[in-house]
Length: 141
Image (cartoon, rainbow, N blue to C red; front, side):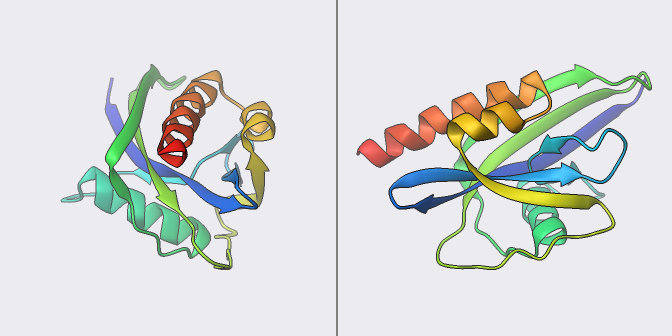
């Protein structure tokens, strides 16, 4: 069994005082809806990987908020074990998304409820719950 370590971010924006989340539809097996993320490459830390993966998949050059992170781990069908860490990253202004068409089939900006319904995997829904609670608490301050 090998260990796969991945990192990425829950990318969001504020639009008309509502938090909207960016979901990506994977072009890989399963065509699942999730967040920008990918495998940590040699000599990268989790922040560097998250920044690189967001840029590769969306062409968004975003600052990663290192002060908050959520994690999950699970076993893959191939017998490997995966550890995934997600940070948050805010899109400010009207930055355009240009998808990496080799890996990504589509994207959508969705409010919390719709994003939660669209996410394919329950563990990602749980991570979104934690992120949404964190961001809503931040916005109240």
